Image (tube, rainbow, N blue to C red; front, side, top):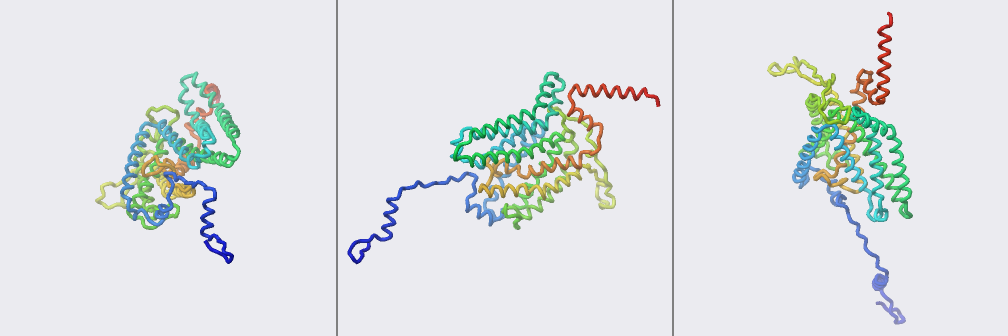
Length: 437
């Protein structure tokens, strides 16, 4: 306290501040809970300054990552052995996990408590999109599966005919559901979630539709591109683990030029060898025309028939092999490996930037040492689209063949139309046979 000239006491600034703090209404402290996968500022900063080669805990994280990788590869090989239908089921499960992780990325618990059933709407749109995409891709495969049964053939043909209408009205039902659940003061959050849901559907189902198309064109065209991404990822981790000292890109501080270049070389070599091994199994190279699970046998085609190349003049006299057998598909595998090692990693860089924008370390924690399912699928999404486009552009013959025309007839004509075509062709052949020359 201070006194003025009149002797009255004047409170000091410190006392006034203390009194004001006592009389002011107390406001509760808000504690922001950090999610388990959010990046702490200090960790994020340290990761930006230290590469994997200098990480103190790198061996522990390497063993956790290796253990999870072995389990994933073993499960993947078992599903490949089971066949096309089970691989498709695996893709559907991966889609569900990816959608779950991405839906949770912008979820706010406080707002969701005031919007009962709003999360259910997201899954309504998800399964509607699934019905539309797979109905378009696998409709003829389903018809070919039930052709022998007349009742199921008519039932499935009718569902396929009206599949687009069914999906449209399912979407309209979801749209009306969304409009009816709009609440005052929550419009911005709800419309943001609506837009986010549609973006997730585009990202997830665009790549998965190409993936499923690759599977039924022949497991080879699914397995080889997916394996190249896995090989590139493992090789980049190993080369960066032991030799990485030069940072590659700021979005992924632990990525190095040594890992990138080493992985590119390893991926190209692996692609050439792996294509030769996989291309010798008809179970992997034959396309599947229906949804059955039986073993396949077919003419592998010229791409999977070995060609011999003489090595005389290229190798010394003591070298035991004088010629080299190469499958033509191995040259296509080299092109796929170039994309897998140079372009596809940018899918991972995009995901890294996306996670930094939302201040999370991983999309989820379902795979120890790897993060979530989406963290493993970032490069696979880019690769699946390219593999399908490459296959359709450079592998599938552009000229019409008997097999291609027959396939179109079976895909697009009903059983009655096919029978009418058969009768018409028989009449044409008879007329031509008896026609005088």
